Amino acid sequence: MFLDPDDYWREDCVELCLKAFADSKAQGKQAEIVWFDNDVFYENPAYRTTGLNAFEKFLEITQDTIITPKIWAETCIKLDMPMAFATCGMIDFSFLTSIGIYFLNGATHEDLSFGVILFMHATHIAILNKKLYVYRIRDDSTTIFRKTSNISVPPFLQDLEEVFHSAHTARKYNIQESAFHMTFEIISMLDKPQHKQARDFFLKNICCWSLSIFCFDKDPHNIKQKLPKLKPYVKDLHLGRLNCLKHLVISYPKLGFVYAWTQKLKYGGGKKWLEKL
Image 1: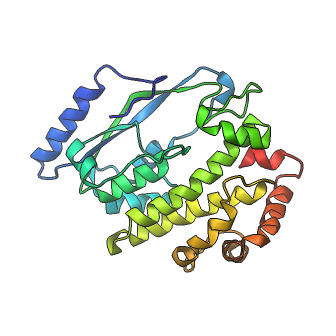
Image 2: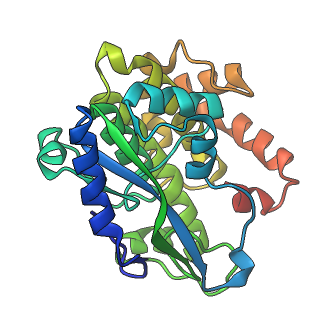
């Protein structure tokens, strides 16, 4: 199990997970993953949101307590919503080590590619409809930093801050760069025929996300020029709005300024586009 240092588990979390593993075995559907919901503690009320979270939306469609990766992927596709996973569950350690999966070093939102790869390699996933993990939303976290003026960067991003002269822009650039690296992680780890449907869906979403790299005037890690490497894997995918333009930019990154212009126009020009990335 993974626990972020500013979060905590409910006191019966581990016990309930172990019971879920035992119950799945008793039903002849031995799960490798127990997946549960999270509660949220808002340290800063400005971040408060309403509505269902991804886990709750998932359970509106499937009520089963033990599912297969196929059902999980089909539900994600039906919801048109990629789902991340890292802290909200327990993983069989022998299974985890057998598939050779790691968190991407220096990446933000790496739980997206980690969760997709992990779930698609499982045989069964046990679902616990309980909020067992308490996620703290606070200022200056690694993922939420839009509503505070005092933004810092972790040590591994200091080189980007020196280039952009802005902690906010450095962290935004890292998010887009992370999407690019996660794209190749999914390509390499989901290379079997039975993974194709899920791979194409998640690849489409993360690939489109990474294209926002063109909205930055500087590209210190040269991500833009690496995009043509994606061409063989996305050539048959419909990449949503501006599909033809996106494919053209992937093939010819020098045209990326056109994509950047459409995004800045969409979000009203100025620096509003950066807040939306």
